[in-house]
Image (cartoon, rainbow, N blue to C red; front, side, top):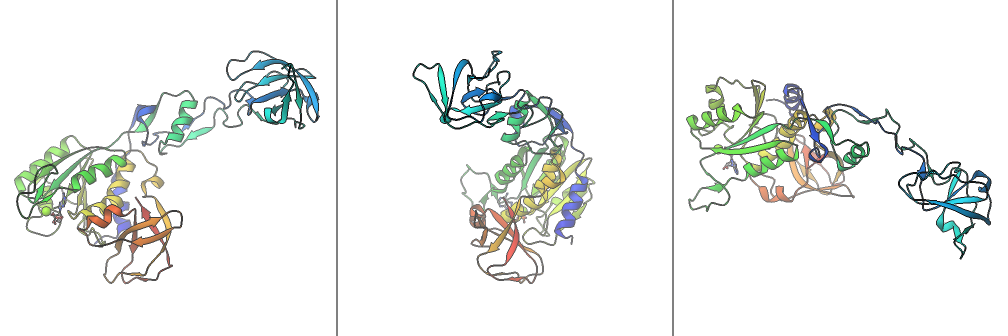
Length: 398
Ligand code: AMP
Ligand code: MG
């Protein structure tokens, strides 16, 4: 049986090299940059005012109280070509280009306007350089603004739009197909009229997880019949990059994923990971396509998706190696927990911001979705662990 870290390492080593597509900015949120990007424009592109106030000549700095004459007005927008002269000032607004010979901007709150609106009294002496945003003080032309593998966030979209870009090269989104298996499963929306049947909850969950990782996804369902499953797998592999199977990977007579893969001539990279929940997890690759076999129990499917599928999808979509890992935090256990088993056990629970406590939640069994739905973190307990309240651990956030 493989260790979790070794399983993830092997999967990531087999993810194909990301390919790039040029995406309009508005379609790139949540995607990953396909190459380094550099600023072509300095920001600010010319010196401008950080305040609403008055642009002063150097000779009028350091003087208060002191009166200067208003010689013109420069709003944010096209440069009016004004200059400040000793004893004078230019009325100026935030973001406005500085008139020639501006040494400082005195903010409006530190002045008093004369009733004739022609003169202004400086109440607090201005220091040279005050409230001036120098050209390039935010960004220099040529400066790196994005690394290949960075995730595109709203803040980064602001930076890219500020450079005048309308598109950027991103990693191509993986096309994922979620193939659920099981004779007992009925899609949501259809009544559960037969005793023993349950609704298919893994399909929507896995599609949603794939979408969060930046993938495009579709889904279908196969009954537990070797011919049906084999055919479904064959068809799904035709036009998808990643096949995610749910259920049928364990050792029961109705667990047909392995025989179906075998009948297609697909051998396994590995099967079974030393983990609870999620032991029967299976992974392989066929013709450059990735195949994940997730256990059917919803919590096992969720945990193995978080630990193995999502890192692979992020990598496929162009994430840097560091960003493939799930977000993590340090957490303090709010109650004692133990793992009597011989496999690492992932406990689901609540990580509370900002205190950083982790509280295990409800039934910790692999079918129990009630507690999973309310959880936002997983804590890995090593075999034979007996952890007291107050002990500090790393948790995975989702
Ligand atoms: P399996 O891995 O196919 O043996 O399934 C293990 C357990 O997970 C069984 O109780 C199944 O009914 C349940 N299960 C399998 N697939 C799903 C699914 N798509 N949605 C909800 N439960 C499932
Ligand atoms: Mg099954």
